[in-house]
Amino acid sequence: MRVCVLMRLRRAKVCSAARRTGEGGEEMKKVVYSAVQPTSQLTLGNYLGAVNNWLKLQQDESKERIFAVADLHSLTIRREAREVRENTLSLLAQFLAFGLDEKRNIIYVQSHVPAHTQLAWILNCYTYVGEMSRMTQFKDKSAKHADNVNMGLMDYPVLMAADILLYDTDLVPVGVDQVQHLEIARDIAIRFNNIYGETFKVPEALLGRAGAKIMSLTDPTAKMSKSDPNPMGRINVLDSEADIVKKFKRAVTDSESVIAYDPEKKPGVSNLLAILAAAKGTIPEQEAGECEGLMYGHLKLRAAEAVSAMLRPVRERYEALIKDEGYLLEVAREGAEKAAAIAEKTLKRAGAAVGLLQG
Ligand code: TRP
Image 1: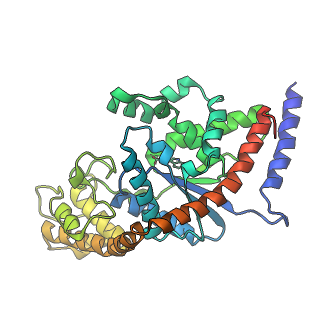
Image 2 (image 1 turned 30 degrees about the horizontal axis):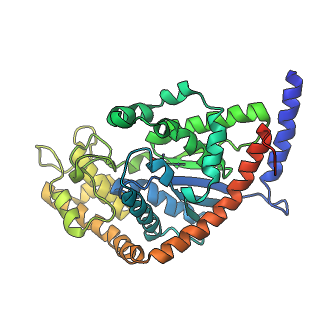
Image 3 (image 1 turned 135 degrees about the vertical axis):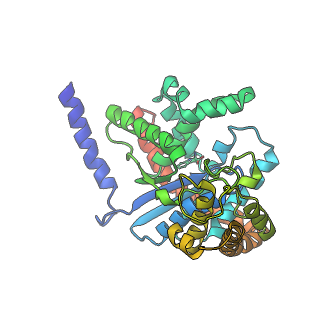
């Protein structure tokens, strides 16, 4: 029996290796997959962390990149229908405004590719209630939205696993808060492969550089987060220049008056230096040196100016794009077509593995 399983695994490996090479036998590109929920605007923290990384990856010809607007995931928290629709279009426009090129990446909306929910159902049958109920984010969100602990909230990581596994993804750029979800995607893939032979590629996390961590302006010990209830703590990528200046002016510092980079002892000032450095492409220590003798107010203005200069072109592109719904829908349609072509093959493979009749 053991030998049998081993043989089956070995045979499956050969198949899947064949899958990983192109028709002419050339090596296939590594697939990088990322998705964002269309909940609210991305923050400066997202921009300096995730978006900058995506733009770098876009230059890397050895990789194929797929970016999704995870609209189905956003339904797990109750929202107005109009808000879901507007946020989806907005995130799509933000992706393009950042400089992600729809010709060089696959950019699409999750619900436009039905294979996601179909694979999620199959994977549900190989995922245990116990492991889902132990997920940190499920526990946090159930506590926060105690009046709406719906099945989707619990099943969220399984849909995310389907997102990733459908594209034979090699790498998933993730922040620390998503590491547990990626782990479960790997566990589900490995579990499935152990039963049915190698069907899914087991993805790996691509962790961002630790240096790019941007903290809240009002509480520099907490990450700058889209869901921070205090709007003054975060800069949104589409904030006006006046708002950017206002938020930096009110940023928390400390009771000393010396500008130095020391995240432990001076978290507020160090966060401002880190933001200034990231916006200019330098390092915080260098900015601290250049601020010698200046007051906190000067540092705040410098940071506000650098961030405004970085985000101005993004905001201008966004304003033009968001007016052109027809164009955005066309980008989404073309992206979904490309995504579905890949996703449907994987869905078929998984369906055949478990014994679904192939029509
Ligand atoms: N859960 C992710 C977040 O909130 C969004 C997401 C959905 C995702 N599907 C994904 C991220 C697949 C990476 C890969 O940030």
